[in-house]
Image (cartoon, rainbow, N blue to C red; front, side, top):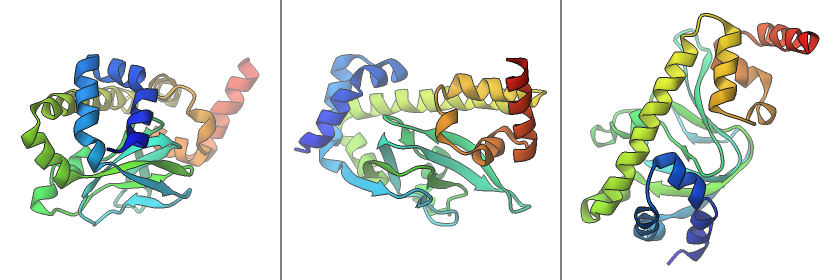
Length: 207
């Protein structure tokens, strides 16, 4: 049994139970089900965990660092869709759901800082889910959380002003702003880095 994985799951237990709205029994049974599938990984800043055009085959659970999920627009610009930090999953579920068709991933996942955690083979997880109903119940809650988060981000991204989008980012990702570059934050807010600098200056002057 992967005791290091289980110890880290316990460390983040309260936060994850609250996030996914699961009880202790479901959380603990799920941890036991997937412990044997957890493979430690680490990546340096800038290293890709998933490449555009490759089939998405793995799930990444972070225990340290910041990862970023995004895509490249037709104009060649990087667009940031979401972030993952400690105890969160760094994945593009939309790519994983197309795994059986071997469709190329449309999204990239990059280590925004050095990251570490555990990776899981998506096919093995799918097989385990078929054997363990408790795992299906847990993953359903995870996907529900992902859908709700995506809905909140859609509202943020369609806000009429950059100021509103910045406020939405801070609400969705508290304490993340200091850990990422302004260039990456600007790509999430869908504005230029120069305009983000103007927003920051106006905030400082107002304060």
